[in-house]
Structures are given as C-alpha cells and as structure tokens.
Length: 295
Image (cartoon, rainbow, N blue to C red; front, side, top):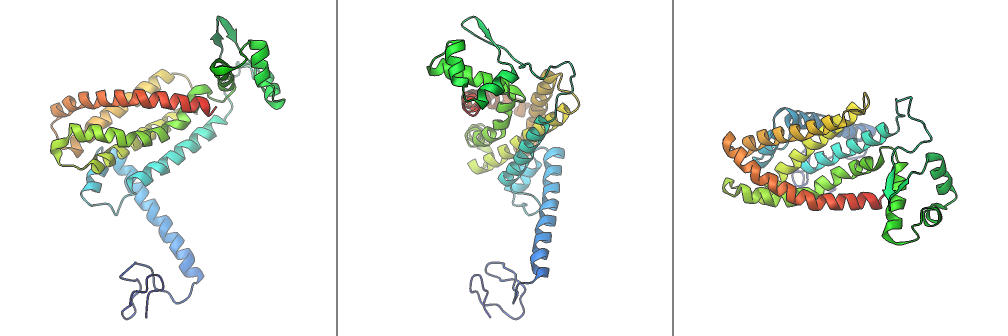
C-alpha cells in the first residue's frame, strides 16, 4: 500500500506516512474533516496561549527557546507577529468607529486647522462631504484656496482629508506602523549582529529576537487602543508608558537572550539606541510619506 500524497510505501496499518506525515485514510469522511479542523484550532489556541504568555511574562524567553530548537509549543515568530498585527488593525478600525464621548464636540466642525501662506484653512465636515460627493475638491482647492497645482495642492488636499478622517493623520500613521516595524526588523538585525558579534548567534537569530521584541511593542500599542475606550486624553502619558515599557522590556530581553551582565546591557543599549534612531529616522520619513499618499 502506498501513500496517496507522496507514494511512499506504507508498512502494515500505519496511520501516518513516514515520508510526508499525511494521515492514512481510505476515504474522506466527516469525522476526518471536522476532526482535522478541531485539531488545528485547538493546537493553534494552545500554541498561541504559550506564545503570548512567554512573550509577556518572560522577556527574551521565546527567542531563547526558538534558537535552541524548542519550537513545537509556540507559534512561529513571523506568523505570530502577523496574527497580532491583524488583531491590532482590527482593534484600530473598530475603536475608530466608536463615536466620541465628548458632547461638547460639534459634529460639523473639523477637528484641526492648518496654515498655508499665513492663511488658516479649515474645511468643515459638511462642506468636505459636499466636495467629495460632487468630486469638486480639487477645483475648490485651486479656486477658493489658491493652490492650482503641484505639491502644495497635493499637501492641502491630503491635509483636508486628514481633518475629516477619524483619528486624523495620527490614526493613519498608526495603521501603517506595524507593517513598517516588520520591514524595519531585517535592518536592525544587522545592528544587533554587529553589537553582539561575540555571542555566536547568526543574523537570522538576531532577526528572531527582534521579531519577538517588536511583537511586544504591538501588544503595548493594542493596550493603548483599549485605553482609548475609557479616555482619549493624556495621550502624552500613554506614549511615554509605551516608550518606557519597551525600553525596560528590551533591557530584560537582551539580558536573558544574550546572557550579559546588567551593566554590559546598559552599555550595549547605547549603541543599539543609536542604531534605532538612525534607522527610525529614515523609516519614519517613509512612514509619513506613505501615510500621506494613502489618505
């Protein structure tokens, strides 16, 4: 008897093929179909719970487990990052649809004003809706605001869109952030490879460490979104908490994963922070440009 998937010879009554691992069944049935679905869901739930627990409770632990070959109990790093990014995007979109709880905020007033050539420009929501419905926003900017063409015209148009977008331009930036963090990882991995070249880790293993660290950053951003349900004030303090929380977590993760003394970790953090700032500057500009274009 042969495996129907890879033609490997099956010995006796083997339930699984030794070549490809496929389950050996004579004919498809509902028990097999729904059993496979249930097994996959329960397996993912178990792995996801172990991964989240390890990520939050034990900084650097997941990366250590992965590079030392103990991977069966956890979701693969990039897959886990994609899962929580999807959840994060979903949270941002859902929370963005919840009406503002401030009764003093008039519905027909745009939240921001920007200045061009010394002239304050504010397009109320009612006017903006009229311009977009009649497809006359470009002509309005050219005739009424005096920006006929070129980049100034594009800038004014995108700014007006940001005025009338839930969460404003900051919300647009937030929507793109997790994608840019993922693209950021391969570059910062090079900085880690240079900073910890004596540890013997390969470039890919440094990347794994940064995937897990950035996953934790996404978790902090998710908590920030949840806090918005109760109050959208004190955003400066929330950003400060995210920054300090990320830094403390990074310190503990490096200490665990790279097995360095705390004073060595502090010393290394200086070089890592310099690398982060240099790369973040370039990626930040790209993030802003992409967010402006996607308005």
